[in-house]
Image (cartoon, rainbow, N blue to C red):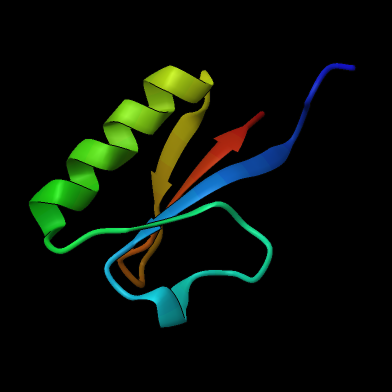
Length: 61
């Protein structure tokens, strides 16, 4: 089965901003969040998008 068009992970500073049912990575700083998003982007072969509320989502297009 090939995974297409899905949210693979969420990276945030606050667990309250994370969607229910997603793989959530909670970070302690903006710098850590940027690094974790970049790492997950490479590992999961996805694309990191930073939303206006300061949350990253890693998606597969």
